[in-house]
Length: 168
Image (cartoon, rainbow, N blue to C red; front, top):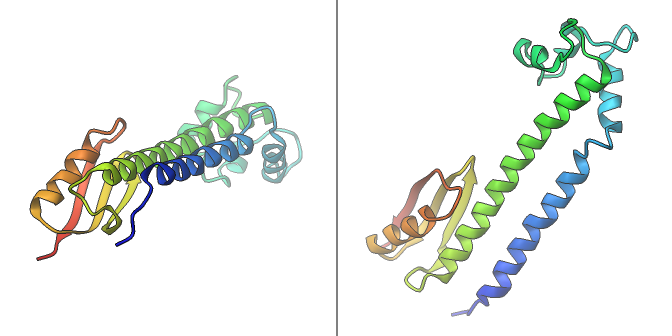
């Protein structure tokens, strides 16, 4: 049976999360709104440098409620600054959730690897909006419960769906 260096695995997983975070920051840097300026120009079909709700609604993000929230001066239109500020803020929220889920998944895998009673290579971990999903195989009901217990203690975990199967 192969022995895995737990420290090396945790380091590798952590570097992947931090690399993703760095790339995400570059993509949504509010000081670099050139990609959003291009989107704004495409949506501005009458080229008046303002978006009506009809124009903005071509971007799936802008429902009536979100358009109203983005319209800071309440003039019924969005200028490029209002559009870019609201859109970049929304993108940051999405990226933050993805990064948080990645961090939780990494921590869960590390904790499972560190648990002596678990054959961690047979356990898969996925996270979505703080909910951790465990799948795979364990040798006993006690191991199944242990995996759930270990993961449920991780900061940011909102719930654990334990789909582990006990092999007899």
